[in-house]
Image (cartoon, rainbow, N blue to C red; front, side):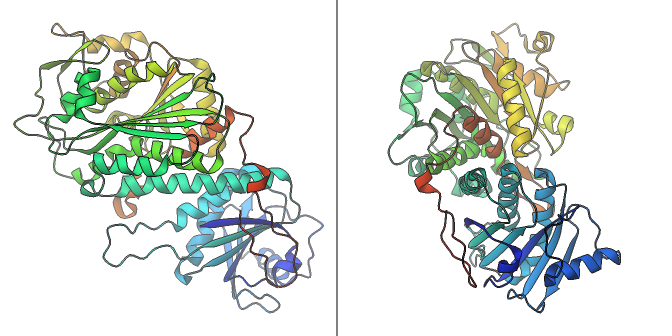
Length: 507
């Protein structure tokens, strides 16, 4: 999907050759709007008659309106124009248009939009129109190819917002693609190949370490999880160098359990198919790197993905086994279904070699976090207040929200054991916190944060599918770390004013 942006008046837009037109209608119409415009006239009449409520997502569909070239017009209320209301409006608008098989869509704002709201509108439209196709015999891919945003007034910030939105959408859809794929189409080896395909070009490096290299590194905890699987493990290391080598990188660590049966502590059969989503943390790292490849901000980023299946077999690790992690700490594995923390802890130790500015791990780690926060906010745990605040702000700004959870030392009491330095589980109470406390033991050499996305990485039921979260949060955080958070001027193409048919320069 390609996004464009133009500065144009509604009087010109109605003559453009779009398959359909979405008009973003505010709660308060500005005085400068031409009330004789055919769209404006009809909508004002509908509002006066009580047929259109001025709340976010309320809409009016107009077909073959005299004086308007687009056959289908959807007027949707954006209320106060916040990012949240913009997402609601665009999702509703696409719901009214999705059956039309559009290829070219115009979106016009009658009032000034913030750059953030514009970015939210673009990403919401992409999310609503996304279609998975990889393993279907007769796929029905998205038909919508081009979206032209038009504003009555436009600033440089709007151009940057469209460029960021383009990159964000590509990143989110990479994350969705790999999380949605069945486990036999998203093995550790295939993940490594995907990472290598993304991390190409100047400033990028990628390597996929196999069992020999991982054994040499002493990653006994990661190896323990992988030993029951027939699929070979991969430890994926991605690097983006957009700044001087003297600048410490941010390290992203994504849990890459490509399928989680629970191992010997096997899960119930019901909904076990959803455990293909247990590599959503890894998928989000791939998505962030895809976006970095488009934006190329002045920052250094490392991505680490410990990828394996967690399977029951005669070789699988058993409850009560003790293993030695890369850090040298010994771990009693009381529950083999608490495997995510076992692969992450070795990756956190590996991250030390980069002398990072910050390390953020992302994992579908605990069902307890779903109970605590549901599907609205990801759980945020951090040993560093500044890092936690920056991630919270990035979540609020992007709409990919999180909530900070406690890390009191008392929660670590349940992880004590007589037979090793630490146990991998601490009981049901406060399960998401005790999991984070386990990880914290391996993250003492740098500012660290842990995002538990078990409730936000995918949807169940009729709308089953990956959400692409928290790519938005992570990308927003990374761009905030550098002044070069937008593309270079040469990459931003803004369509000129035209008469009749819309100019189709692309960003």
